Image 1 (cartoon, helix red, strand yellow):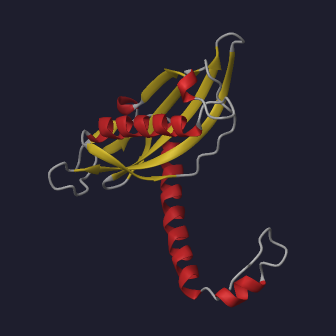
Image 2: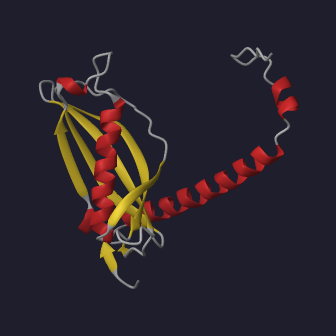
Image 3: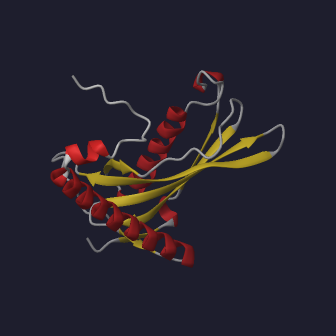
Length: 184
């Protein structure tokens, strides 16, 4: 596919007021609500770029830096940072705003890998390339490429570790860890 689209052409902003039904037992907004919104905006951004149905292939770590309170306005900003053949990395930043106090806080950042799928065959399809128009977009593309490579290396290393694991030797190394082994 020789088609290219700008990063800006598929950037999405989603705002939602956090209502009482979103709260967890601690009175804060449940992390699952935020994750659901992140998945929604990742899909919208990827589908907008690819003009295809998309699925979530993976989510990099999601670290909740700051809690979100009921009554705050949550703003999610998403952008396609990197594209491969059929996959796209969507970067998402989440902020919450306390109207009364006028305080904005960054709550988390994450990267979703989305794959464009043909709706009939259910097979991955090529996505348009990215036109990078400023230094930030170039930097995000490079970091996305690194993240993709590091994830592949991690999967490869972890697979090898699982195959070569000496469970007896590793069990002996658990002394001092916060566990008790109570095998029959």
